[in-house]
Image: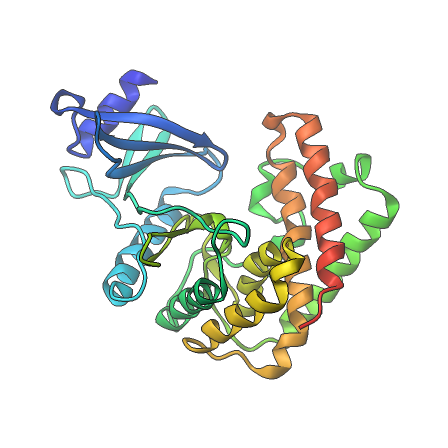
Amino acid sequence: MAQSLSAVLSAFGLSPDDGWRAEHLRTLNNSVFSIGRAGCEPEWVLRLHRPGWRDAATIESELDLLDRLRHELSSQIRVPRPGRTVEGEYLVALDGSLYSLLRWIPGTPRRPNTGLNAESAWLLGQGLGLIHSATDGWSAPVEWNSKTLFTGANPGLMGADPSEMEAVLSSADLDLFADIAERTGRAFDQLEDWGVIHADYILGNCHWTASLRLGILDFDDFGRGPRLFDLGAVLGNLADFPDTWDALAPAFLAGYRAAHDLPEDAVPLLPLMMAARHASHCLWTLGHRELGQDWVALHLRARMEMARMCLAVRF
């Protein structure tokens, strides 16, 4: 691995001979490394892409999206700037693996118990609205619909089968999963605002500086889908903190509306969108069998419990 990373860094013009170092941060969909010089803050993020998750064309489409967004929205939000190799390419292919480079986004996530307040929730909503408005008319190589979210067509399964949930979840949870999938499909059929969505807009992917400058990362899941579904992930995060829900959820929606249209008759569908995010993530969870059966079982049950909780939310 060390030799491969050295070769990849050199291809991006960040040779270890010049002091550049890689530090492993995490492995989930991809293996992620911070890149910097000893004693200094990181300057880049290197991604070793998980085989089978995204092909080269899809990754390059994501990087094109980021490059366009950073030019169009640089005065309002920050998104990672893609790096290029010394030959001007986005990707390095080595030993059957694909690597990409992104500029480091400074800051840390905020949650209601770590500094997220009505002001930053408003900015959080505005950030997502800005992305939706800026990408009107843009295309995406992946489509998120009821089939790709809730059936064997979900790319996150990585070879697993949805029926594997039957060995873990209760009959009540399985019935709830089927009900959410069916209701979400009908809701999607009614929604007119489809376009590019982030598809993983969660509190952990939003970094804040001390001056409340918002940086948005991890566009790995981006695709075309119903814009309303994109609100479900972060609203689901906010619902984890019931004591602040009544202040932060309206602030988030107000910020979103400042940048993108949200019809009033769509708001009653938001609890379903929040539940759909959690339920559909059950299939993503099945795709991570390498983390162990106990991890998979724990997260499947937790996702369905959170889905049930979200359906009870009122706006």
